[in-house]
View 1 (cartoon, rainbow, N blue to C red):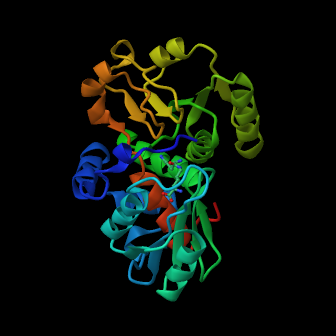
View 2: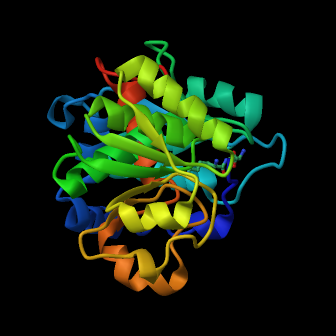
Length: 281
Ligand code: 2YG
């Protein structure tokens, strides 16, 4: 799991309105609509005034990332939910959050980034939510995924979540992972759950020439170049760093969804705050 740096997230809160407008230009849908759909919720039914959220910094392991909790809070506030970052971290922060009336806690250590609903017992996991959120965005960008072939790069936690969400939408899947066993494991899990066959790709370059829809859930950098790009290509890229070559970014940006936190955090909120639907990480 890639550890974010302060530079990756320093403008998330201040630019959230522009980010949402950009997302709507690319997908035709807002952050709240995409996240709600990813969480099996109806954005219109989601009462954002029903709860209060606290983001609690955790200093364990590699420690606090400057601006991380504020970026998470900025996304949640943009979705119309009351939110605060606790003044104290760790256990003191958890107590402070509850004492200040929080219903939902967001916190991340070096291994997991989770949200917990203290009222309903629901939990949400960032890797799972990020996979689902990006599939909902890709679906909007492609006008549906049913019967379309998607190349998934990276069969880690985010990739696995995305694969299940895309299979559930009737997409055909091809998967590439530097660890081939991870691809075969994912292929058999998708087959067991949905009865659909997943193509395991072993040559990424060749696979990129054969696919128009790409889901980059890998930490690999710059593997997708101008040579692979076509006007109808659509790319969902939660992977950090970005898998698109810098030289190709100018061409690819208009049809690529990529952000360090926004879609994942928004989907976590709808999953853990929703009355029905998914959640439970
Ligand atoms: O509270 C803090 O500031 C730190 N304990 C946060 C540590 C977060 C570590 N994880 C990551 O940086 C990412 N895996 C978060 C999710 C990124 C999703 N694209």
